[in-house]
Image (tube, rainbow, N blue to C red):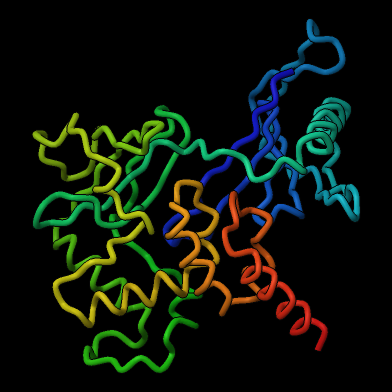
Length: 304
């Protein structure tokens, strides 16, 4: 039986990472490194005890249950099915893989195909919209709008002075600035990111064909997944504040330089509850004192 352990970014809005343990027809997924949800998928072959023995079933995706190292397995109710025994067998194979590999989390990122919204002025990557693990999974989104997210609209810089009467919060202003910079008829392009994080341009949406096949250095892609450099100082400051606010999530990225990671760790210290929820997914910690201080603060706040 093949077991594949990997990570994939949660995008538009960016909300961290999913770590996944897959046995082909079934996956265990976590977004915090502690609590896992087990799913069994449709149309697959999966081995049981004998590597020569496979069974094939067709069914909709099923939530098999939840698991954590501390609490063990909690089965989800299963609708009576002709394939009940097969579902149970697959689920227990997945449980064995989970018990064996859960503590190895976080896993390497596998979503090497990325869809970037492009700057209308220079066709450079502006903001990351989506990512997939396989070329066959590449899709055309319904719209090309970048989204800061509901939590951002509710929590980010709630007292920010707004000069634009058409937006009612700093999060909406972020959306407006990015999507205006992309233009009225925005373009987006899929890139394959190699082991050096350089990108090879692929197909896109509203894309000039001259851009197909272009090669971009890793430095051309915003490290924090959205462009932080603007001609207007006020706008640059707003996006830098946004990146600081997003820092507990950004720390899950595995390509950050130590200097970048340490700076994010310092700002993440201000978001103790998020750091405490996500720190197991950080591939590296530079300033352990800052992370530990955030976790202590989180425990004190949760005990009140």
